[in-house]
Length: 319
Image 1 (cartoon, rainbow, N blue to C red):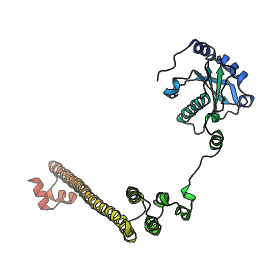
Image 2 (cartoon, one colour):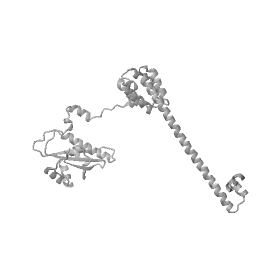
Image 3 (cartoon, rainbow, N blue to C red):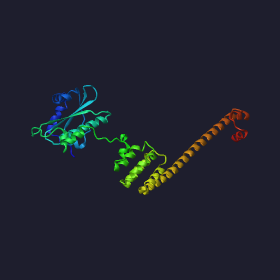
Image 4 (cartoon, rainbow, N blue to C red):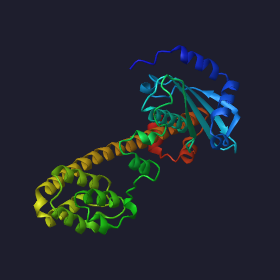
């Protein structure tokens, strides 16, 4: 999508509102009193809009300002968009721009969202401006949208949900039970619940494979193969897929065992090599010491006493 072609309107708008004093007075005139009360207009600063999504840049001719709050805590951003043509989805577009500004703020290391105040400056031929500036009115179901987006979002918290409730969820119960308990309880403790869920016969083979692979990868058990085989014995309808999984885990265990054995062998070899190297180093040091002592006129008895060498070892070094 091509970027919006600058117009004479854009040039005039920008020429005035890139000037800090002009922008400050503009906001003093037009910001609602309740919002102006939290803005320290003396700290107004023009910001870059480089973070705006490309498809929005094609439409936006805006000014973005940052301001400190009157309490000195946090920031407020103000987006002023000028428009000479009415747009039914303008409120939603300005919301998207505002969220982009919030994301940029968070990306800079802040841990709370800033207040972003979008303002539309309209000078079109249709009068008055024909569309709502409430983005919730852009929905086909505005009342439901208002309830959804002005309250808490739905939360599914498995950590506080009783297992008895999870067990009534049929097709999603296996996923929920596995995700809730895999890392916290020994899998053998909830084998009975798994057997019951398998008896419902409402999961696909791929769902079962994925669930039990997950259990073995992150689950809390010392013997995953025994767990799978025990499950297969109590859920004969799924014995085929479960035994196949058990065999795969058994084969994987053998491969990992061989790999660990090779790794341990290499490690032992490295340790032996280091030990041999240290031994050779000590022998060379003793040999050098013996030669130095002989050069300085020390007798054999003195050398053996100081180095701990036997007569035979000393003779081997000398010769």
